[in-house]
Image 1 (cartoon, rainbow, N blue to C red):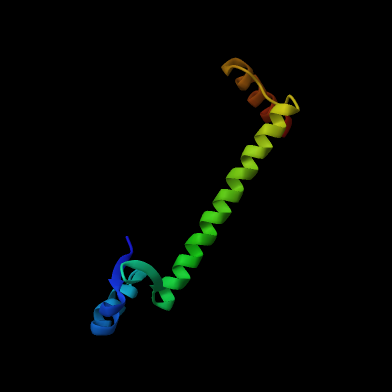
Image 2: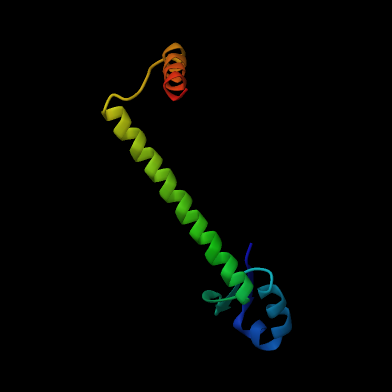
Length: 96
């Protein structure tokens, strides 16, 4: 969870705020409202890397869903365990 400090705390206790910013994002508030985000460069890079990974995962998941819907629309599916086993056996035989 991100640390939250007031702008006054940043002014009066910068060492404490900087220490927290070395570990994670620090949210700075003004009059109780979110105003700024403060962090070290390492935390910044880590947050960007994690955001990229989340976006790539979401893209892969969306692509898999769309591919599955296309396969169903094209009739490229099987129903039941027996049919699934037969389809797997056929694919293995084709591959070998």
